[in-house]
Length: 166
Image (cartoon, one colour):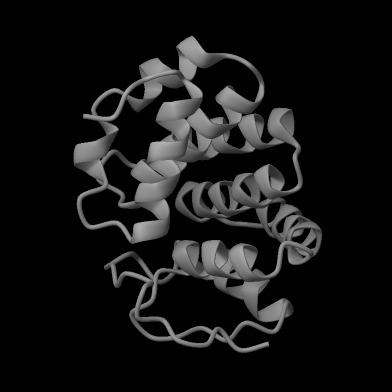
């Protein structure tokens, strides 16, 4: 399965090595890496068009997390895994993966905003609106260069906390 058009997938500069487990998991599912395309955004695109891939992606990423040699690789794999767990409706598992991934990310990593948003989404799904609301404070500015789907997800998460978008 090819990734198709990537015009809506933002280009970001991340360490190629830190994203190696995510790229490998995508390739196991038949999604080929494309130069300059954020593999975490590619995960989102895959899950948006093929929700059935979520379980296979979780399996591939769980195996990768167990074998990664450094925290950055584990962090990105955990964020991708948490995203897939959300698609599967596994809010508690997603919360754990995303919280662990976020704790391992460096503060300036572009994946922090995505991980924070997904963690808030897991909190909304678990009924903890206050935790999600607290997590989302100030996140909108961190998503300035994000794709439309991620910004739409921010809006949905805010509505889930009963916040009004200004």
